[in-house]
Image 1: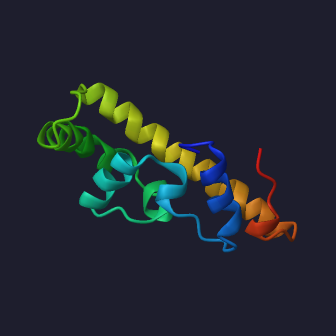
Image 2: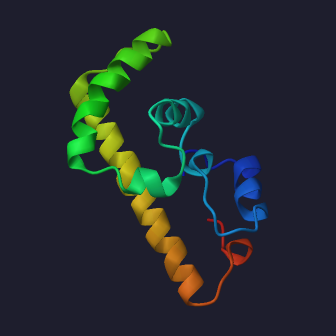
Amino acid sequence: FACECTKCARRWKRSGSDNILLPDILRSWQVEFLSSQGIRTIEELVHLKQPKVNGFPKLMVKWRKEKHMKPMTKKSCRAALIIWSRTANAIVNNTHSWRVIGFSSDQQEIK
């Protein structure tokens, strides 16, 4: 997860639903960028495949410049997008395994 502080951990545990939101796993600027590109759910992030990823790095470089953020190269942006997608995929798969064995998200252990 993007943040491991106690406040965020309580929010995650308290949610009590099987729906994991992007703010639960990403930083606010990352969520804002993805939302600006039409990606609003973790499932949409998981399905961000290679052809679609190829156009996003350039958009991210431009978006960061418009937001007056520290510049990043297209290569760094591409790597970030792949990491976000893989993280989302791992969390979805992990959450699915909790559902299969009969745990709800409010019973999941926070580490």
